[in-house]
Length: 171
Image (tube, rainbow, N blue to C red; front, side, top):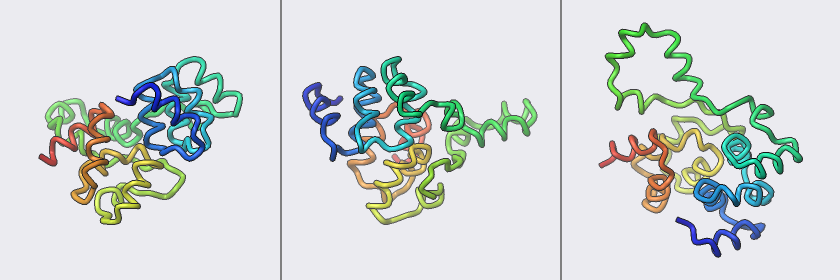
């Protein structure tokens, strides 16, 4: 958990670590508006805050033209939704939960990062950039055997079920 004083300092720092800003927004919703206006707040984080942040954060982003609808509506797993519509109900019931957790996500980031890159890259800087700019690919990063330990630890603290399943698979 991010210390309150460290969170205050980070949201005011124009050079703050974007990953730290995401962690602050997730753990301390009352800082959402401050995180949203920080110059290092990346578009994916703004979208997340626009959808899941408190009223003050959503209002602040709306003043800058950022709303969940402006980014294509609420965050949804598009591939899983499409597959669910195509598979018969009986077949879905037979599908193991672990396999469902490892479905390849649809990359929606504007930076061109793909699920294959997140799963296979050995470049530590690229892994960090994918974690920062493509939150939809974090479960893939968690499965990548080349992901560095500090990032693995941070991913485990997010509380995302898909990421947790990928991390459990690593062990």
